[in-house]
Length: 72
Image 1 (cartoon, rainbow, N blue to C red):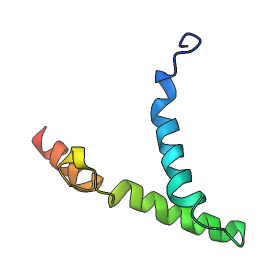
Image 2 (cartoon, one colour):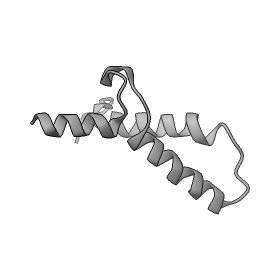
Image 3 (cartoon, helix red, strand yellow):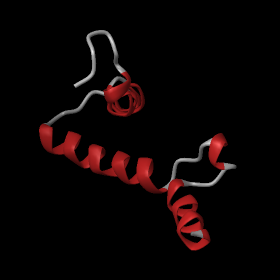
């Protein structure tokens, strides 16, 4: 357990859910729970396999992981 006021232990999860809300949830209205689930699965695929980040030298996560594993 971290001390009171030390939020470093859940920073990764809070960052992910913040991105999820700002990039998916707040941008559209969902007509049904089924439609939301479909969009969530599509977003998770995008988040894990396609999104490009500058700190990974412009590579999507899947390719960055492959390069890291082959280098190890």
